[in-house]
Structures are given as C-alpha cells and as structure tokens.
Amino acid sequence: MTSIFDDRAYRGTLTRRDFMKLAALAAVSTAAGCAANPVTGQSQLMLVGEGEEIQVDKVNSPHQFSSDYGVSQDAGLNAYVAGVGASLARVTHRTQMPYRFSVVNATYANAYAFPGGSIAITRGILAELDNEAELAGLIGHELGHVNARHTAARMSTSKILGALVGGASLIAGAASQTLGNLTGSVGGLGASLLLAKYSREDERQADELGMEYMVGAGYSPQGMVGLMDVLRSMGKRQPSAIEAMFSSHPMSEERYQTAVNRARTTFGDRLNLPLNKERYMASTAGLRKLAPMFKLFQEGDKAMAAKSYDAAEGRYAEGLRISPNDYAGLVMMAKCQVALKNPAKAADYADRARRVYPTEAQAQHVHGVASIMAKNYSAALADFTAYERMLPGNPTTVFFKGFSYEGMKDKQNAAQEYHRYLKVVRQGEMAQHAYSRLKTWGYL
Image 1 (cartoon, rainbow, N blue to C red):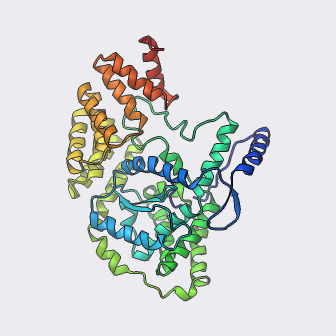
Image 2: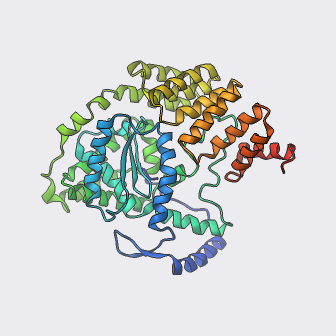
Image 3: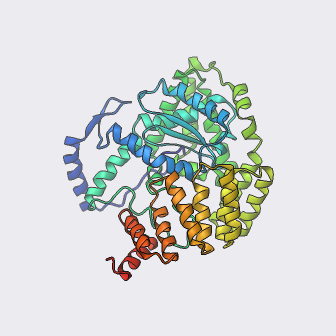
C-alpha cells in the first residue's frame, strides 16, 4: 500500500559481500523476470505479474481498510469520491485494473493505494481539501503509484532479498506483537509493509502522472498545486496530524515548486479547466462539520502513542460529544479503555461500535480483547470466531481463539488453533506462548 509524503529515500544496510550476492542473483532473475513498464515502456526487473498484484491487493486491502475503521457508511460521500476516481482511471496507462475508490473512517490525514488498484482516502484528509481538483490530484497521485507499478517493483526486490537471506517472507517480522499489546495486529500482517514509504523518485513520478491524469480527466492542474500547498501547510501547522502521510509520502518544498512549474509550463494551456469547488463543498458538507471532532481524535491518537492514556480518554470523550455514534471514535475509546485496563468500559464502547456498524470487524476484535481481560473466555471465543468469519486471514485472531480455548481448559482445540497460528507466524511473544503450550501439552 502506498501513501503521499518524506524526502528520506530508502538506505540499505547490505555489506559489499551481500551486495555482490544480490547483484549475481539479480542478474539471474533479470533473465526470467523482465517486463516493460506500462508508463515508460522501458524494460525493468519485475518478478510480480499483474495477477499477483491483484491477488495481493485482494488479500491485504480489506485488513488495512478495517484497521482504518472500515469504509465510510456515508453512501453519498463514497459514491462522489468513487466517481472522481473513475473519471481519472479512464485516462490512466492501466485502464484494465480493477480500481476501487473508498473513503475510510480514519481521522488522520492520508491516502494510499494497494498494487491491484484499491485506493483509500481518509476522512481526515478530505476535511482539509478545498475543491474537487485537489481531490483529483490526490487520487491521481495514488493512481500514479499503481500505474508505474511501484509496489510491484518493491515486491520484486523483496523476493530477491528474501532469496538472498534464505527465503524470508514479505511479512516476516511484522508479527512481533506482545501479549500485553492485545489490540495490536488488527490490520493483518502484510498490509503495513505493502504501504511502506516510497523513494523520492517514485514520489516525483507519481506527482507527474497524477497531474497528467487529472488534466486528462478535465481538471485544472492548479488542483495539484493546491493539494501540495495544503499538505505543506498542514505539515507546518499540525505536523502530528499528518506524520503518517509524510512517512509514506515524502513531502518537500521541491515537490510543491515542481507542481507550480509543471502547471505553468507543461499544462499552462489547461489552467482554465474547472476546480469544481462548489460541488466539492456540497458533497463533503456533512464531513467537514466533523472537522473539530477529527482534530480531537488525532490528539487522542497522539496521546495514545505517547502512552498518556488518561489524556487520550479525555480527547476521545470530547470528540464523541460532537458525534456520539461515530464508529471510529467508539473503537478508539474502546482501545483506550483496554490500555487503561478497564475491560468493562472497553466492552461497552466496542459493543456500541458493533451496533453502529455491524458489518465492520475491528469492534468485534476489540470486544474479544476486553472479554479476555475479563476472563470471559467463552465470550472472547465467540467474538474472535465472528471476527474471523467477517475478515479471515489475520493470524492474531487465530492466536486469540487458541488463548480463549486455553482459558476454557479445552487443550485440544487450543492446540489446534496454536498450531494453525504457528504455520503463519514464527516470531514474537505470541509465537513463543503458542509453542511452549504445544510442547508442554505433548503435541510437539
């Protein structure tokens, strides 16, 4: 998955000997894995086919969307954003991709894309934009990453590096959650790595393609300039609210100036194309009313990250006074109560969230965690079973099912779930716990 903003390019830690091995392996792989880049037409090392891009997206994007509190229940807002996205997708280099454009309930400012074309825009960033052309610039940038196959190229490099170090998997190391961090890993293992930061060159190319696509769809290139100015201003005004975006999408003064220059030169004859401000304001009116709540939730998240749980509780409570049934806010508060070791309150907020958004899985997971804390293992098992039915593929849920069975003194079923967990995850405290139980019980 990719997002939009940091000038820090990747710096490896390979030794000279490792580099020589990698170079030799790359030479072998190149013979079997070259493909023409759909944007440049140039040959590039590519060990990931289009079908694999789509499959990786299909497996991982639902977990990330759930981690961001699910797709917005505002059908009108989703349809509006999807319509803007579809108009841009028609003028891309890979029109055949199964693009999907969704607003997710997260209140931090970001946008990101998975390699198969699933693109998410958070409520937090939508509240900051000023017109539809800026939204088109944002979506166009993400489409640029998909069309230039930036994630696929990183996945190809990971395959080579994996072979170099003995077949390390793409998601290894993402499962070092501890038993104490019970609310972790609700987004799945692979998603966060797919959304790792891009290089400067990738960002520049995505900016160029984004402006090309938005102009091709009938928007003024000034929308990209406006987007870059919004991001630049947010970075100065409230850096904590946008650090997630900057961590995956390096932002700089250079990118803003480049957008200004390209709008004036390459697309100077298109500056009079519409910005569609009125339509944007009408379509996002309800969301923009919640902007004060978003800011409070962002402050709560920052306090949670600093382990200032009492402060976080206060911010979330203030935000929920603005919109008492906001699903994201209820789940945030539930997780805060878990951190405060208040399982009854955590379960109450999670249950309220489940009633607000019955088909979204994260509240189910957090309710299960609260049930484990309360030693109500049968309830926890029901919660995690329901979660896995709604959103299969998260190994942490499998571990918690085993932990629930263990609490119920059902060793046979606990062993079965722990064994299933260890097929996927071999590192971290949870893996150690599962292994030790299997060994103690005589299954190993």
